[in-house]
Length: 226
Image 1 (tube, rainbow, N blue to C red):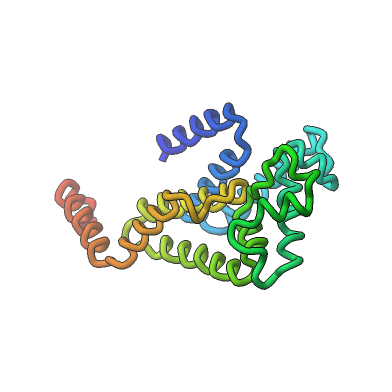
Image 2: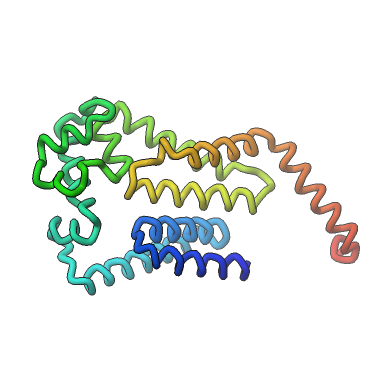
């Protein structure tokens, strides 16, 4: 655990040097997922609260106006306007949206000033889905994420594997809120495929744990009988 904590500290410093805000938040989300699995939801909620307060304090310290989209744009590379515009598009056509792959075209047409310098490419997966496919796409998207979390949490008898899969998936989902790439990221499907295989084969997982316990008992017979 101490080695893993040290490695996370090194990763945090390395990511900080890249100035990638989304990567820092994604790593934080993965760590909070590990806290939830190890110590419970209360401690994870406390971690989220501390992170939110720290993030807000940093924004205020940088001179950001939380009520100004333009101010937030400066500190988020235009993402605030993209999110606001995407939500406006989704509100206009809430049922079926504007069609797959239409976000960039529709955003440039509706918000030409905000599109300058951003490429008008949405950086938020759920906003993209809502604008392009409406509820027709948003409901399956939410169901997929929920089913994925449920599947990864259902991995039996392998707490380390479960923790690794859940934390990595949490990082990818949170990162997709800044870069719309959840559904096209190969890592997403690798994690889900691995989790599904383990969840659908509980006998193998149980056998592996039993074998581990048997070996531990052989090495430490006193601990096994005590």
